[in-house]
Image (tube, rainbow, N blue to C red; front, side, top):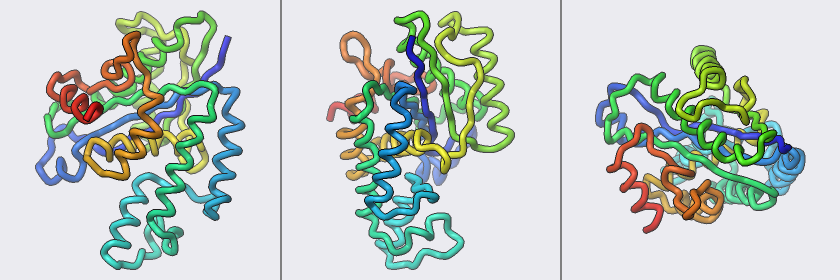
Length: 273
């Protein structure tokens, strides 16, 4: 029997009714989950803190993926960071130094004895026009299904899933959806390898959630064609994507939500460019 931890975070936004400005600013909504052995967690936590100390970053501050691009824009435009900005503590940091920290943090995945990454993505450009809660449910469900499929080889395997706390209303919705699927199942029939209660963590308290943020963010940037994101995704994320028996990534490690052949082809072209 093995106990696993799965850490999941999101990147981008989704709305049922979108205008062109919204789509340009947030063309994708992504949820990423990375699965690891619980026995490796302490090692991961210690080494992540060591990297922060090596880069002389404050241990109590979270470096979010979104801070990278806000910091880069400020430095590109020659603007000072205002004190009310959450990334003000990075005001004296060069953007390249911070992205090196993220790259080094993701290198920790190679130290884990087991790691699998699962990513779900909605293309806002294709305007699925599905209610927000239904989209969130579909993302959670697809991630749960792949975790269950990944662990079902051994009867007593068990996974504990952690996600970033978002808002009281959304947290309750996701917890209820998760519990309902664990109890009633779906086409998978049941989720016997996933603990039946969703765990919500503050991202600034959780090394796992912070790494999940980098996975989701780098994939979002990869889809947008950002060179730094493409490099990070191809070198640090892509090797750990869950695959099928014939090494297929799409449908196993990356799923479009909802299913859409055009979106899948778009992702496939970028993956194998």
